[in-house]
Image 1 (tube, rainbow, N blue to C red):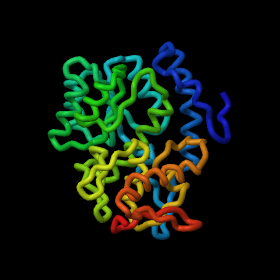
Image 2: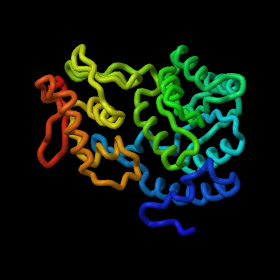
Image 3: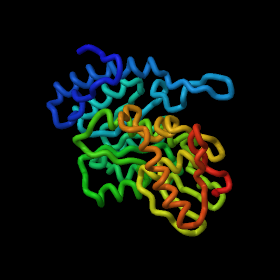
Image 4: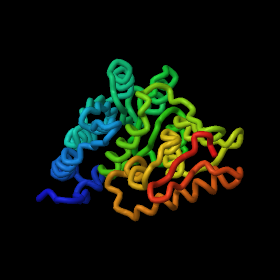
Length: 288
């Protein structure tokens, strides 16, 4: 399969778990070679104070722990992620998984829920109780809303059900890494005046009033709060919040900015999100 020069097609890997293991592994490997070349070409370079640095969520230095008892799925996921430049350790049961998570140093964990020895719920809860805030993505066949709620409430940061799209898995991991800029310590409450957010709980407040936001609205707000006082262009917001292979209309940023204003500004007669003509958007440091 020829590697495309622009956006590669991921269709070969979109039904990783549903396809037979041999074919899925072969397709995944073929797709990964192309994706890896594109990542190498992009390098996520950003200019900061006159210097060029490698963005902190570039996969080339990221170490992951995969806790998955299905040997075929674990092998396919490990091979695909290593093709993306990740380093991946695999453990096949819950007890060993918790031990490895405690003893090793990882940038993120991928955890199944139905594990021998100890459930993924217990792993998430135990690590959080011990003060370990390493990002956790749950990867499971349990798709009920109560399972998702319990996993997120016990400490997981994201939830993906099987069968899953491999590109979505990679994008979700990248999003977790972007949000873990505080190095895995307990996430602080972030504030701009009386506008504050709790990244771990994904809650937003105006003063003492909680504001209901969708997942994407919260992601955009968190991106702006972390950069309060700085002008952010549409492209910067897209790169920081949306999946890297997003191919939709860039004006989607304007849509979410309008929705955020209706949620966090208009009901409180405030103007936290400012439009900087010709440049982008800026969140006022005083919360508007």
